[in-house]
Amino acid sequence: MNYKNIIFDLGNVLVKLDEDATMKAFENLGMGRYKHLRENPEALKLFQAMGIGMISNQDFFNAFRKIVNPNATDKQITDATNAMLITIPDVKKQKLMDLRKAGYRTFLLSNTIDLHWRYCKDELFPMDNFTVDDYFEHTFTSQKMHMKKPDDEIFQTVIQETGIKPNETIFIDDLEVNCNAAERNGIHAFQNKEFDDWMKLFS
Image (cartoon, rainbow, N blue to C red; front, side, top):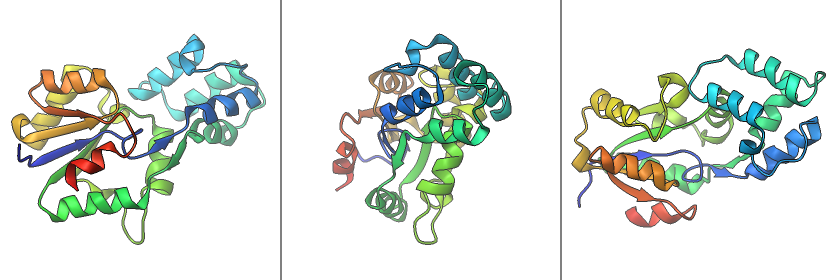
């Protein structure tokens, strides 16, 4: 299939993640020891609300302080939250540039919170004089759209707003459930099981 459009997920597709780093940082702030955020229902609920833009960053900080430590600063909570975001390798940023130059329409579709997105835009995406806007025609984030993967409505919104044809489009995500959702909406999907797998598609 000769695709014309590529929709990228963010985490574990472009951004190398280390979720343990964030859990350890939360532990150091006083949250307790958890292997994954879903083991702490209060914290998980806050992140889920952030993920679809239902609470502000300040509301998140204030509520999170009640869970971890009343003396934790906004910056400490921000740094702990972002500790999982390790890097976007330059080779991947260059590949995104090359794909656009080759004529592909490239988009980002991510379930993300504002703190993560700001950090990625400010710290991880810049390369030379390039920014996130140079890599993608448009970025779609759950927190701005107030909807999330794997719900059908987020894929339908992307299709409608971009005017792409689903059968000319490939969606790259690390999670099977999101890939299944894309295919349910007529979009071809590739599950990125290992961090660099998708690079081989366009070598």
